[in-house]
Amino acid sequence: MYYHLYKPLRNRLRRYALRPCLHQLWFIFQHIRNGKDCPYPMRSLRGRVQPWEISLLVRELVLNAGDHGRTFRQYDDFADAINGVKALGEKIHKQVITPQTVMDEASAIAHQQAPWFEHSAHVGLLRYWRLLRTPDVARILERMLGVDVRKVFQIGMVGGGELMGLPYVDTRRNFADIRIAPEEVARFYAPIITTVDGLRERLQSAQRYDRNWAYTWNALEATPLIQLDSAFPHRFTAPVPELQLRAFAQGVYYALVNDAEFGNAFGKAFETYVGDALHEIFPGPMYRVQAETPYQVGRNQKHGADWIVSDRTGHLFFECKTKRVRLEAKMAGDVAAVEGQLDAMAKFVVQLYKNIRDAEGGLTAWRPDRLPIYPVVLTLEDWHLFAPWMVAKLNALIVAGLQKAAIPEAVLQEMPYTITSVDDFFGGALVASATGIESFFRPKTQPAYATWMLRPYANQFYPELVRQTHKLLFWDDLKDILPYAELFGVPATDEDTM
Image (cartoon, one colour):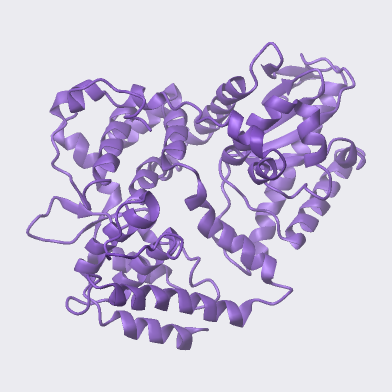
């Protein structure tokens, strides 16, 4: 549809030499993302070039650049390429964004950019460590991949660390000191390495020239390590090195997701992870964190809310869900795909209200006390449901579900629900722990702020408490994964893991 707008970028990038450009992008990315020296003296690109723009540029270079031509050694050549990527996005936006479509576009932009705003790539990594190390999931992982979970994270995190100082990893690295065999290293890297031709083929199959040009899935996210030099077949360059940390942990998820046993095992692992975090965030004696135990209603066994957090001012009831938003629903304009995801979310919310009804009716181990209740659907990933039509459609689906379950619609005002990801919730919950449940969640769930994410809400209204309560959950897990003394000959320190 917009190929005529795309052609100038295609023609521009055809004048570049692919391999040296991908190599040089590592230095640029380290500057804009990690504060390393700018490769262009007397310049700074930080704040002017964004990491998702580098990822887009890699995609377009692989699709269009050749073997010879311009490189990024000179600033003007890099600026010409990255500005071409920026300009195309702006031209497409001008064609499609109207007052009626702006929020649809904002949702797609959020899905594209939000992963880069997570305060540390290691936070997501440690989350997956907690999820994948649980016995049932770890057993499936070892059966499917032929490598145990601790070795997966050791190889991946050592590789990620090496990519902070070098633009490539060497897949022949010796891990004998920590008893990891070469064939295990090879099995680890196989799913996340690629050749230029292999990556180009996957990118071509997904490429679009419509309003979703910038939002289509980028195969670099799955295979961020690219073989660029046949003279060194075991060296794989990472033009966007942070993707290596994401790819190996999330890639394991996608490698296992179709296993018949994985869904239930992973769901239980997520519930356990959430419970561990809630105990960290809401400590006793001020708070009580309890897992709801199964109970009988007639002949039916029910499981109730996954977790309940209580203080003297109120209760949080949790429903934990690992379901991810489907790729097509993350793009702009696919109403049917979004509505399908909204229907699934509505069912989660209604189920939570059913669980609360049973609890208030005295059917569970929890005992009602007339304090306010705040239902929370907690997802593994952000859903970014803030476009007005999405909110209206979701509420309509929830109302219909409540009616079918014979639950009064008034519960939506009496117990307003929250939908949030674990990353967002934990950022806000650290503040809620300091204020008390009612003091934080009553104003947060009012209509004016109901669609705000918890972390930005806390930053806006409790900036001092955000600073005082900030901490990275389970950061000490890094020391459980990496045997520093064996790898580096020195004991781990706090500085090593920051």
